[in-house]
Length: 138
Image 1 (cartoon, rainbow, N blue to C red):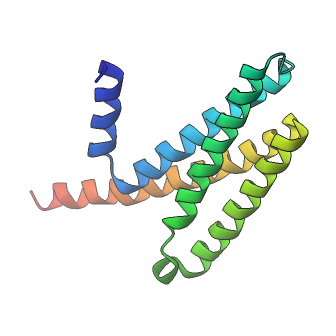
Image 2 (image 1 turned 90 degrees about the vertical axis):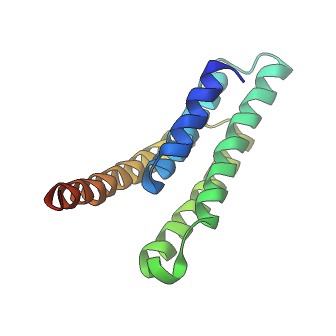
Image 3 (image 1 turned 135 degrees about the vertical axis):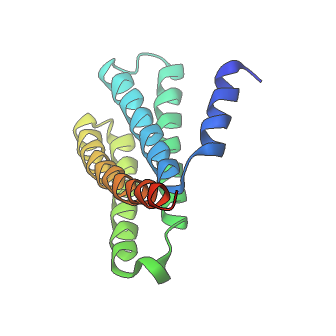
């Protein structure tokens, strides 16, 4: 295992549940950005077309995992809304892939970034509260 793989494995194993979600968002955003760069570069050879498709497939796979991980019983309306958003984003990525449309991908990235920021805020609130509680119990 390379040092980078060991580092990533350590990050995943020690991350809180919300941090894992943030890591998935980060990877999806990177994949979309990579695909955008390839499209903007003109997709001049079959390897670039393949790389674009692979990056967009990874982003869709991440959204599928995020959808599958939703707790609809506990999350109720929020989980229902996220499910619909994730489904719409997957459909938009498919459309962008077929049309090589970077504008669609820019819109998808914008929505993902907003969702990521909301999760980041939730992480701050949840885990800051835990740190305060832990200090109070010392």
